[in-house]
Length: 136
Image 1 (cartoon, helix red, strand yellow):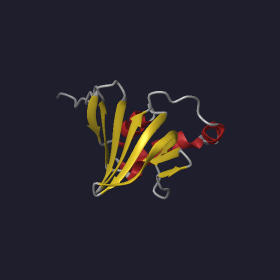
Image 2: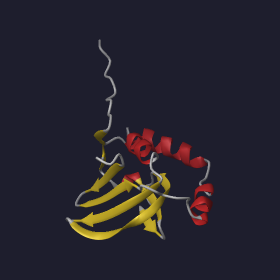
Image 3: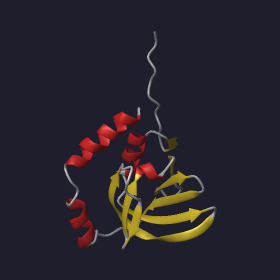
């Protein structure tokens, strides 16, 4: 009996599994973002990815140039390499899209971003994998 093999996704693809989405997002740091609903621009700007998490209760949040992304907020992620070598990630939820593009010259993250990143609790990884297993 042949075993089912996991897919291989290179340079462009669509991801549905939570763990794959988290892994793709964790490759990002400084981004340009666009948030659209029903094809209408709601917000755009530049920011820093501070945290990627999975929660039934918390929102995806973009505030003060800090992005906190709850993968549970989205149905899937599509990524591709742009002609200028940057990466574009599109997170899709019903009629809403959060598009993230790597920034050309990000510079150093602000002190607030570094402080927020240090505040991440050690239990996150355990909680994420526990919740991931519960979904399967």
